[in-house]
Every structure is written in C-alpha cells, then in structure tokens.
Image 1 (cartoon, helix red, strand yellow):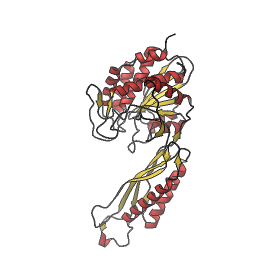
Image 2 (cartoon, rainbow, N blue to C red):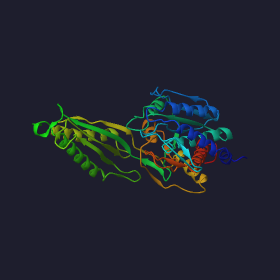
Image 3 (tube, one colour):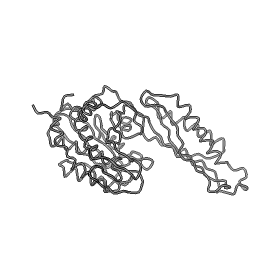
Image 4 (cartoon, helix red, strand yellow):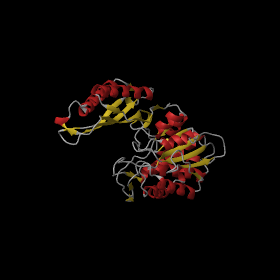
Length: 392
C-alpha cells in the first residue's frame, strides 16, 4: 500500500514556492491596499488548478482569496490561512541570492502563505488526501492599527473557516499552545481652546501633567499585573510606548497623546479588562479637568489550546517526521495573530507555525528558501494526519 506521506512530499517543489512567493512579494500591499497582491495570488492558485472564490468579507476594496481541496469523503476540514497585507514601511522589492529570499512581506507573511499554498497543491497532485478537505484563505486588514481584522471577521461570519487551522506566521521555535489577548490604546487628553504661551495659560487644564499622571497610573497597573501569571502565556501587562504633548518648552498645549498596549491572559474577560482600563484613565482625566478620548481598541482575544486536540497531536507528529525526529518545546505565542481571532470568534483551534524568518515589521525581511520548503512539508503532513488520510 502506498505511503501517503512519502507521496505528498515528492510533489513539493522549492522552485514553485520561490516563484509564488516572489510573485506576490513583488506587489506592495500595505494594510487596506492588498487588492493587487490578492488578485495575483488568486491567479496563481487558478493556474495551479484550484477553483478560487473572492468574497468581499466586509472589505470590497480587496476581496479575500478562498480555495478548497475536497477529498470527496467525510472528514474534518483543515484551514491554511494568513494575511497578505504588510505594515506601512517603505517597499523593498524581492531578491533571491540562491538560498535566501529578501524583501517586504517575505517574513510577514507572504513567504509562509506561498509555502502553505504549495502544501495544498502537493496534496492535490499526489491524490494523498483521501478524507476531509483543505481550505486555503488569504486576506487584508490584519496589521494594526491600520487594520481591524474585519476581513477575517467577515469570513468567519459567513461560515468560511475550517474545523482547525494552521497559520504560517514567522514563529518556528516553539509550539504555541497559549497566548495573550491584545488591545491597543491611542488615548487623547484635550481641552477647549488653542495652545498658548505658558504665562497666559490661566487655569486651563494641565494636559502634560494629565498625560504624565496617566502614564504613572498605567505603570502602576502594569506592576499589579505581574502577579497574574499563566503557566504558558506568562503575565498580563500594560505598556506605554508613546506620549506626546506640546510643540516647544514653554507652550501650554491643548492636546496630549498617550499610546500603548494592554495584554491579558487566557481565561480573563476582554470586556472586564477594557472596563478596568477605562475606569483608570477616566479618573485621571476627570482629576485634571481634561476631555478624554480613550481610543481603546481590542485587537484579538487570548487563547489556550488543548494539547490533546487532534490538530496539536497531528502537528507534533508531522513536525517530527518533517525534521527527522525533532520536537518543539511548548511555549507562548509572543504576539497576537489570526489564530487568536479564529479561537475568539469561532472556537477554531489554530497552531501558528511558519518559517524561521527574520526582520518582521522592518525593511530588512528575509527568509531561507529551505525554511519555506520545510513549512510546506509540515503543513502537508499535518493535513494528512488531521483529516484521517494518513495514520495519526
């Protein structure tokens, strides 16, 4: 009897991975502007024989990319999914030196998407998928604060999601079974009137003082959060990364900005975390007589996966097979991604695993082609095991 895992690996082509990754990385796609990159990816999938759908998913400016591989027999659906948009930095076109691919999006996360697409194609060509199905999805609106995940939300609302998912983000050194939730706050303290010289400020609210007090209050919150720990996810946190007020040294400003993040643990309520934050910053604003726009936006919720779930067990076995027996330590997901959203919105368990890539959120992104090939192997093998097409 043919070995389905050996069969599918024979169909994975490094050259095709490189060609697809280069093709979609050649097209700039900052968040909210991924239309052309999505169209190119859809064309590549169509050329490979997939029937591709382009649902608006609440973002008609750049319809999502959806393709399916059906075995024709019952079984679970495994989703390969990720975003096509990139952070708003100067565009760097892709280059390849024979081993390493460089350029905007190659790490975060067009390279990983190309690897996932190759896994789906290898499953189709080999005929090794004999149960269940594969769903491939790609979309815009991922990167915050420019995007708000609306397109993935739209896909989920339309029922376009798998029973479990693999996400090829740039995380390769651990098996992330838990992760914190994230909110971004871009708070603004303001007063009536215009900026004035300090000697003419009268009794107007001291916005620089209010901003400083807010920073202190949030730093105190962060200190108290250090006692809240999770065995995998670590500690909750509140972080202030930006404060801005005034234009010169002796001006009484009319606006002060305080920006940062609030992260919470699995099992904590995102609504309760939000309400506590708002209570603290409103107290500061009221004390100084300032008007507050809290600018608090929940990005993604916390999650925790069952280590005995079929997806996790299939992934662990497949990673070992693809790497010659290696194992990944259990750890936390350090960032938030679409796996948090899939779990929070639809209770779809998702394992984030992608290439050991470098330079995400910089202009120096790079990834070895060998890593993209390895990811294709892991994804194809996991699909066979999870769907029941190969022994677990």
